[in-house]
Figure 1: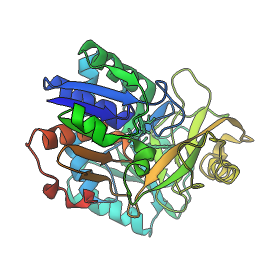
Figure 2: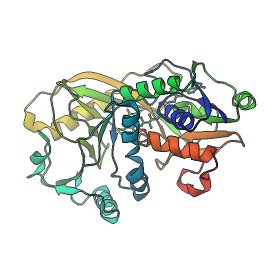
Figure 3: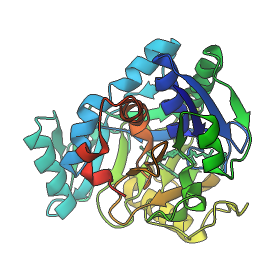
Length: 344
Ligand SMILES: Cc1cc2nc3c(=O)[nH]c(=O)nc-3n(C[C@H](O)[C@H](O)[C@H](O)COP(=O)(O)OP(=O)(O)OC[C@H]3O[C@@H](n4cnc5c(N)ncnc54)[C@H](O)[C@@H]3O)c2cc1C
């Protein structure tokens, strides 16, 4: 098959990789430069994990998470820092119990920590006596630039051109190629009336060093954070609640002051034991493309064109799995009817 992939972000590149590995001819079209700050795959890190307070996504990741190690083996590089994950929430919080239920139902190894024993896994995190943290080991953070660099290099090595070009006409592409994959991230609504909202999401690096798992608060703004990157004296914290709505073509990516305040508050809440005055050393933002219930959207737009919209702020960790699913759909080895949660 001769396939066009519109979008050279995580999903487009993972899909193109899977297709070239299966022997198909692929051309990727990307409107921005590699590593662009304008899409959804911008930044140095993403949380990868199996644990979700939703059995559907945990089940996918029980097989999907290990695909990262296949990518590492293909490249000879280390992409995933396996730090483990702490899901932090009130002892009586709905999400805390949903998460625990899923882990128990699916036999995912986990440990429940309290304010007394949190220091056994995190160098400086604070838990309130009313909170618990659920630790899962099969999780950590992925080195996004290294992964995207490998994917581009791999595709070039397989004679898959990555054209720096903005596509405006999908039917025209459909006349030239056997299949077209629309993996345009936040730009999906420029082509389809998709039920998504594009928002600008802020994250920041703060002036403290931390060692330990990645962490997510299962309440409020679902603030999440990372340990320090190797050799760095800063730690990243991000704000998950939907930020300001954006047109992806607007060049404005100024971090949201309200989110920065919430990030500073979270640093004080989680790391007061460091006795630091927290400061933001670096702040940036990136786009979420969210559906109302955070489910991904995949749909055939016609007999040649498949729309692939896995974001809602949690898509990165599924990248290689999405690549596999899309290739299976194109090759007739799977059917979207098997994935009603992704229905458009
Ligand atoms: C701040 C932030 C934190 C996140 N944290 C996590 C996390 O911890 N864990 C996790 O799993 N996920 C996380 N996510 C979500 C994850 O990053 C996204 O799901 C994923 O990057 C989406 O990839 P994509 O390829 O769909 O989109 P993109 O990376 O945006 O790629 C789409 C590409 O298509 C190109 N394009 C669009 N239209 C055209 C056109 N007409 N012609 C040519 N090219 C076009 C764009 O330029 C863009 O490069 C986070 C997202 C953000 C913003």
